[in-house]
Amino acid sequence: MALIVQKYGGTSVGNPERIRNCARRILETQRAGNQVVAVVSAMSGVTDGLIKLAKEVSPEREPIEREMDVLLATGEQTTIALTAMAINALGGKAVSLTGAQAGISTDRVHTKARIVNITPDAVKKMLDEGNIVMLAGFQGETASGEITTLGRGGSDLTAIAMAAAIKADLCQIYTDVDGVYTCDPRVVKTAKKIEEISYEEMLEMASSGSKVMQSRSVEFANKFGVRFEVRNSMNNNPGTIVKEETPGMESVVVRGVSLERNQAKVTIDDVADRPGISAAIFGAISQANITIDMIVQNVSHDGITDISFTLGAAELPKAEAALKAVLPSLGDKTTLRTQSGIAKVSVVGIGMRSHSGVAAKMFKALADAKINIQMISTSEIKTAVIVEESEVENAARVVHTAFGLDA
Image (tube, one colour):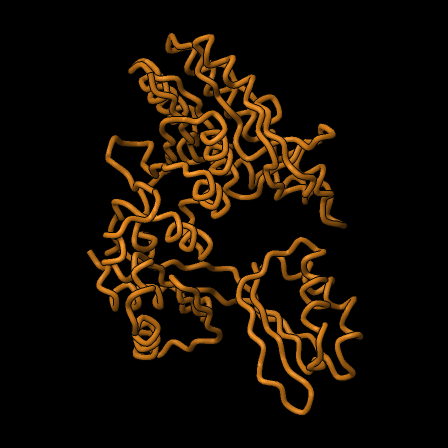
């Protein structure tokens, strides 16, 4: 008997018919002789609807994050109850558990909490009694019993973390696509499915804008060695296996191209070039719990320099507020500039470690398409650039073609 964790995204449970489809798939998995924990997201559109409601009742100020967590957690709780009902109606035996009931403990950072521990005793007990366990994704609770949520895509993290905690034999991430593609097939029509990909490549693609998996869930899988498969909940096609790196993977120089919209750039001009300046800037950003991406510091001139960094556009107001408080300490002439309407394009592949010329090929493809590069960032297996958001789709297509990724 195998122990299997399955995760179903919002589109997979988007209406009653799809919920029944998932219920049948889950029940078939159990009747094949397996124990099953099924993690589900809120039905598609529900979370956005709840956020809209919150803003309508609190138009004067941003809703308090603690209360947002209490509100948003109801989306997944609705889906686990409905899916358990559907399984029971089909003759199965299912029980639903919230994140708290399943023993998922988190820190106290509301709306993007991190899992600190899982005590899966209740889950194991329910499985041993012959139940399918329907587990609410995206949520947990603090040590003091407050509801928390894990951020966008947090149901992926719930599934991976629970698979690690109960030592599952298999973890399947069901979504509305057949697996991980060389680029978003809605943008690049010639993108093709990847049969297997390393944790590192998947992590870079996820953190660079690929919406198939949440980056934190891939980090968790890598840390605890949870091999998982991304596949389509609407068919039985094989998906993409995400696993540890193997020697043969390096033969593929670039595994895929990712794009991330809704980015913003912050530039702090004429800061004093002395020790402690960067610490003051990014300390203020850290205190506001803002995640940043690229950082560029210009060459110092006459004792002053400029520092730029990128972040999600939604975080820009928080970043401006945090930086205005420290601006006077950064220099007599220091000013703050911001720019939205930008996007990021990245090429990813562990083969980049042993092959040269990747950046040059990417830059030439963009130059030939007359697309201007605003910022550049590199790592051992990734090269990323910032471009105008209006040009990001064309940028992704020309880079995808340049590296021979078209089907």
